[in-house]
Length: 261
Image (cartoon, rainbow, N blue to C red; front, top):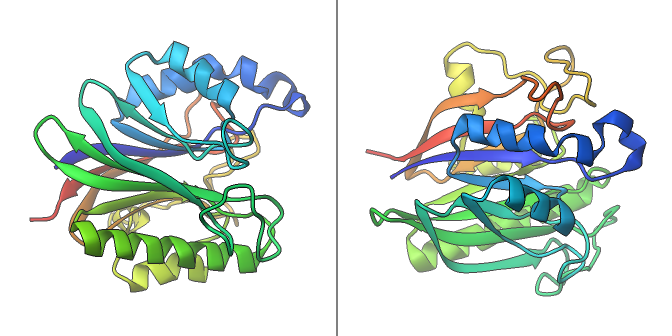
């Protein structure tokens, strides 16, 4: 199996961003995605209209997902995929709450409703894996930790039932030393940033407020993890501008995922 995976927080559409508001960045986002020739993208913060804008800019991609308030309401944790190469199998979602089967539910002192979207994806060559994509709360530590515990439980159950490898993408809103991240590592999920660390490359920030800052005290909050039966190669944090703009206030993170030999 070979798949080029991206996680990318699009930044919601708000007039407060001025010249960086979504209508002025749409082309930059599309150009960045085209530049990397990615197979599958886990996005965060995109609402339905934003996804439709990308659909027009990127006709080679399709997407699946639902708003976190249900239906087309609220932000999506949508998954985009290259139609010529990949086909969708089973799909679903759950809220990060005490009532996971119902979207639009807040639990654990979360500031907003939160969710996880999942899908099984199969290539024309027959390679198949599961993709989970999420956006954890940015305020409540309890919501962050219990939300990830629920995701880990769901991934474990899914993998036990299907024996499929799994990829997890998302904006976790925590730094690498947080239990949200270390808990995944303790269960032997592979962190894409471990590749950079082995190469003695700094990871740096992935959230930059449209300022383009790279290093300093801030650390990454956007992640790609894979199950132990997969390997990660050639990890990139894209800090470039496109169309004269940063595509978002988050940098996209890209990794090549292959079956472990």
